[in-house]
Length: 612
Ligand code: PG9
Image 1 (cartoon, rainbow, N blue to C red):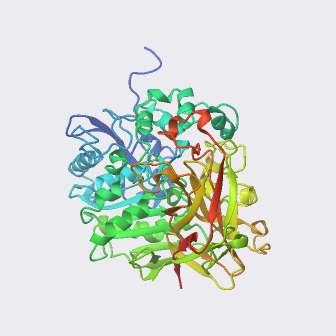
Image 2: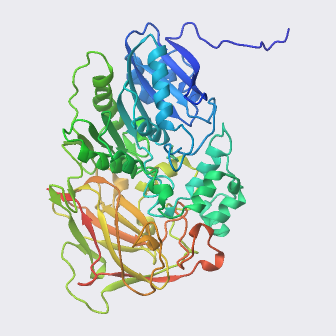
Image 3: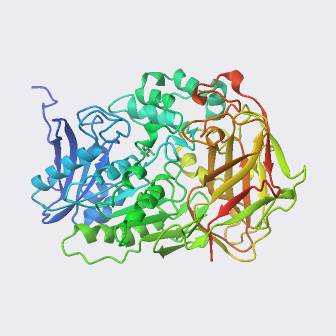
């Protein structure tokens, strides 16, 4: 008899949980691998479900303990210690599940000609769970972050009646406007790794894509366009990469799968808490966009909830006491899980749980470092909010202030040469996009490392004598020209710390981005149909920056930086108009003279959502 038996039962008799590993049949017969962790002795227990492409088995492998809370994820602890049944499921086509995988599989319809999607799979899974888990009370909640946030949102569409509550974290909602794939049309090179790892095999894992050298800035620049870098590692073989190449603009492919647009059509079917991170390096757009899209139909203001934490992507699941050098008041993620998420989910899932005191909007105020509660969000905006945003203008002499420029002279502009062959880096080189620590903190990178580059313009206000609170999405109103025929515009709203910060010396003079984004100029008139920028003609670029709830403290200054590349996170704009930037040729990359206007008739500003 061989020493390795045919079967080995891995159940640990003295563990405090029972693990059931099941294959649940969906309506098309495909079976999905599902891991169920039931506290021993559970009765009338609520179920918390997550549907993931990232290996359900691994979610129960944080440690090798006999204790379920130590084995499951950190953010599961409060739930599983309190008797919840925790369920993780591999989405179809990944890991232990059968079926075909489609990246962020769209709903059944023009983009999905099968009979199944994540909405039907969630439905069928919940149907099975409530019928087959005698330990449960028949109430199911769903949660998950990022891709798992996307599957959470999908479950909210035509939901199973047993689905009582949803808590999508940092969900991927619109991959073109500002979540993973693009930001306002600029492609995010980090996706080459993601697509490679996620779709090159059913069980693919992270970090497998080859990268030449130690500096992606250098290797991606040397390769040319994103398409060339992709080709060099074989991404051409992967259908989702080919879809990206076929759909560089905001066409029906992207519009029809944008979940905020889909959700806006009907009132929310289940109470939902949108959990967002202020410095989300991956899905900074979607959570707040979905909250805003669903808010008008939440007429009683009792179904749609928003949380904003001072976190990186998925930060609500981890330790929230600091991010890079920026410290908060205690572990804000643990505070959120204990004081907000747990009572919120209990209220809908646990039999007899008390009504939780949860405000419609719970937002961490950065700068002052405290949690705040509001009835709605944003507090200030262009129109329809209690307060109207207030423009802060670029002024002569690289100043920033609330007085609109009054002159119209030939000198009312500042210029820089943007050379796509010497792009502005996202963080100091060498840049390794796969370096998790750099990647998670880059939105808080001290911007002094580029502030004085000749191709970065920095406008700065006087020292503030009073606190200035922004609460919403700053709107860029940039008046600019280029000698090229296409261009990217990056606008960064920055809090400049005083030269001396006695309580934390390393923050002296720090330039902290509080909201920053990129806009691909070819989309200024239409996101769907790009057009060449007329050379040397002033154009208006209007786009929102990510959401912020920040107080610029007295002694600090407000800064706006403008540049035309942000590499290698974003691919380079060749600055000459080509049909598809992902396929640009080396000769398309041209130096351009960029001109930023601050005159009376062409006044560039950032409309700040300032509240008192
Ligand atoms: N931000 C990741 C992702 C989500 C959806 C699509 C592609 C990538 C994630 O962390 O899951």
